[in-house]
Length: 94
Image 1 (cartoon, rainbow, N blue to C red):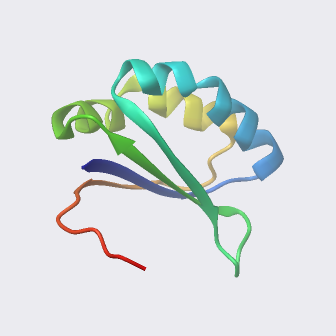
Image 2 (cartoon, one colour; image 1 turned 30 degrees about the horizontal axis):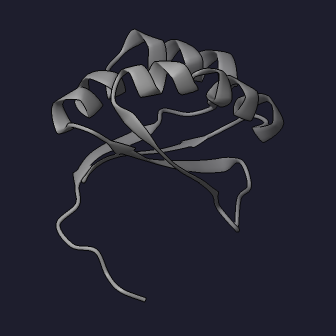
Image 3 (cartoon, one colour; image 1 turned 120 degrees about the horizontal axis):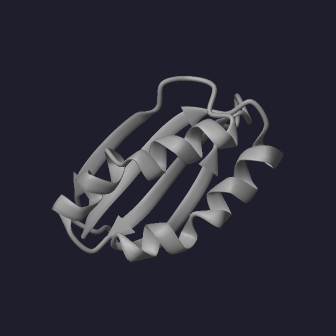
């Protein structure tokens, strides 16, 4: 399963999260199948978003999109995000 992993710092998670939530329709329209949000235990302003995607190329297009960039600016992303387009090769049992 393709995935999009984004790591960035935010100025304020409480400001970032509503903007992220507003973008759910845009993500879905571009191939996102949902995902998970993590914050760093050591730094709660460091956010990691792991999204499953329907297609690697569509994930790549979304990662480069003006929509994503504009949303990050509005949400208060405080550094240059690290973005990885990933292809799952194995799933581990518990």
